[in-house]
Amino acid sequence: MSEKKYLLKKFVLGTANFYMKYGIKNKQNFLKKNSINEILKELTRSKILFIDTAKAYGETEKNLGSLNLKKFKIITKINYIKKKI
Image 1: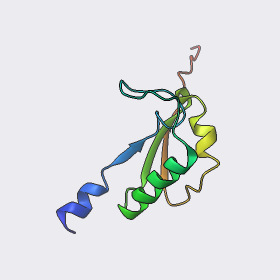
Image 2: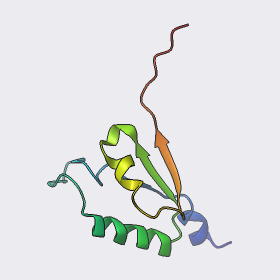
Image 3: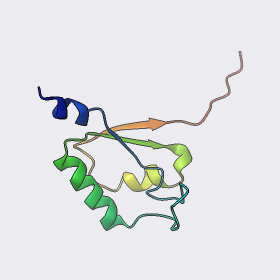
Image 4: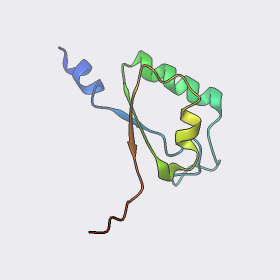
């Protein structure tokens, strides 16, 4: 396996700014669906298989659910659960 192929498998796309204002330079509230689809196409071409999301990212998980993500592995985080012991 070449070094380049190995390194690409280590990338994960973060989706915090897909459907909410996130980051210092993000001036808009969300990306348009066609922009997100173009990003997903590029991920597929680059063999990047992992997408990161979280409940805290507003409507991101819900909206990602409407896209064709069968080729990807989804990593998500849940909100803190307070457990009584």
